[in-house]
Image 1: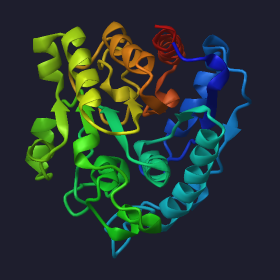
Image 2: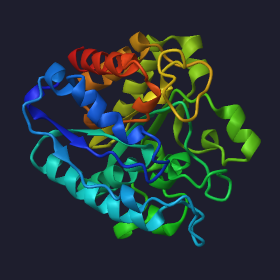
Image 3: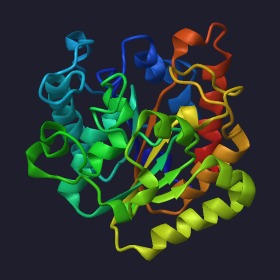
Image 4: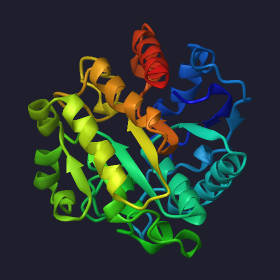
Length: 299
């Protein structure tokens, strides 16, 4: 179990990689539901300035992505905040926002040393900008942090790649059919370890969790970042997401995976993304997510 006194919550409600439709309320909603109290956090919440007011729905002509310059600027600010948290020997818990917050996070870790990434997400997020139907960087964040995509985003401060393929474990993907239909580059053809949702159902969450921990042990990474995209949860558990898919993990399965990863002592920090409170009319989903996260940290 993590020492609660080391946890520092970083509020990073950026929507520059998605759209300003409500996902920026994720962190505030979880905190209003008592997340800090449930986790026993004693550090004050750090609010990372966003550049959400600069959001544009128009693609950049050079990168074919949305909000390239604003994402560069926001990533630099978040990189500094994560770096400071780690230097204070804190455990940064970054509450998004959308998945593009990973650019600032993983570039911070690259400055610190050789770190890996456990990417728990229903989507591969491995599109090339030209293949993305939206230009949203939340479509392609895992591709970008592994060095695939426009240099303006993949090589900020000459840090490309922010994480090596061999140090990435993708867990929970269930959009394979969709990615093939739109011609995304194939994540399974890389050195990234991929354990999709169907495989989890076949093997069981206990076996998969053990496999993830064993894979982490095989590398010489100094530590791992845990990215928890809440759309990995079953659609009936968390339908408050922009891009819904059938299937997904229940809370018990997610807590087993996340809780055991946190208890391993190998996780340097964690990000939580993709829950849209504006789609949660009675607040029930937000409360359930808050309680589930608290149970994960207490395992």
